[in-house]
Length: 124
Image (cartoon, rainbow, N blue to C red; front, top):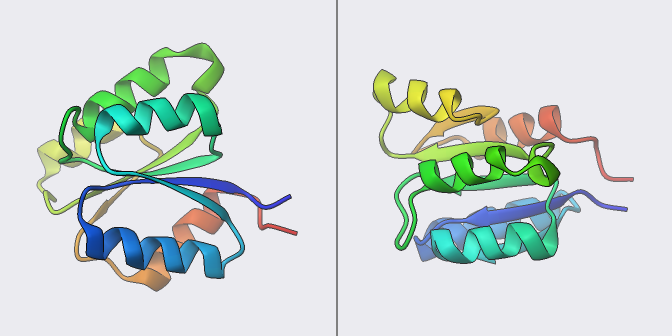
C-alpha cells in the first residue's frame, strides 16, 4: 500500500508540482487549498504525511500543525512545513509546534523527495 500524502497549499503552481512529484514517487495524494480543508482531509483521508504551507487562508499552517499534534489519534502523522518565511523564528515556531521538518521555498524537489522518503517508508 502506498504512503498517503496530503498537500496543503493555496498556490496552484506549487500544488501542481508537488502533486506530480509525489504521485511519480507512487504516493497516494490528496490536496487541500486552505487550512480548514486541510484539517477536514486529515480527519477523512488520514495521511501518513502532510506537506503543509505556513501561509494559507482560513487557518495558517502553524494552526493546522498545532491542531494535528493536539489530537491523539493524529499525532503519528508526519508534518513537513513549507514556507517562503525562512527566518529562524518561523522555523523554530514550526518545529516547536511539532513539525518533523521545515523546508523553505523555493526548495529543491530532489531534497524534498529525500526528506519525504526519510520520514515515510518507501511505497512497495
